[in-house]
Amino acid sequence: MTEPNDSPDVAAAAPPFLRVIKSYVLRAGRTTAGQARAYELFGPQFLLPYAPAPLDTAAAFGRSAPLILEIGFGMGDATAHIAQVRPDDNFLCCEVHEPGVGALLKHVGDKGLRNIRIIRHDAVEVLDHMLPEVSLDGVHIFFPDPWHKTRHHKRRLIQPAFVARLARHIKPGGYLHLATDWEPYAQQMLEVLRAEPLLANTVTDYAPKPAYRPLTKFENRGLKLGHGVWDLVFVKR
Image (cartoon, rainbow, N blue to C red; front, side, top):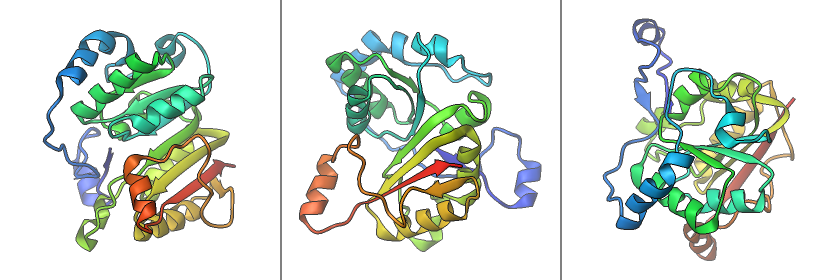
């Protein structure tokens, strides 16, 4: 997941695929034997290559169904759970970290999921080049990196330009669901989403956790320690 630098000089000089400020770093991580095996067994069917051309989602999934984009699924536990409890939806999932992709592929095999497809690529470029506007029924972004230090806030994914891009890709009546366990980031998210004219909040401030989103082990541990979690659910006008 990346965000372009808002400086007009940089934007004018940069080619379309260059993202100067990234919202992620490629962490060093070891792919386990089970994840590597999942790549071999399930990658050919459930991994989609990035290509700067529109994606035929009906062909990719083998059916037409509501399309949900998930950005940055980590190790894929929540993604697999949601896909399992919502079998009538298609989930297009973007993640750049190889171990996480392998972990989700393992979930796909273990749970017999057929409504997930994965693109191991920058979600911004997927949006810009593979998904047309007004094509998504929903977008999930759960626990994006909060970039705690003030000097790193420009790296946060949820910024006005990116939210405007998401809003253009969501169908009228579709939704954007964000979640974070970092309150200052939750406050920024709420401010940014409220300022986007194409989106409307489903509640006054923060939403109750939708039933489809499971509690992660990390989240459950934090809640027991008194830490908060904030969900935001906005709909496209």
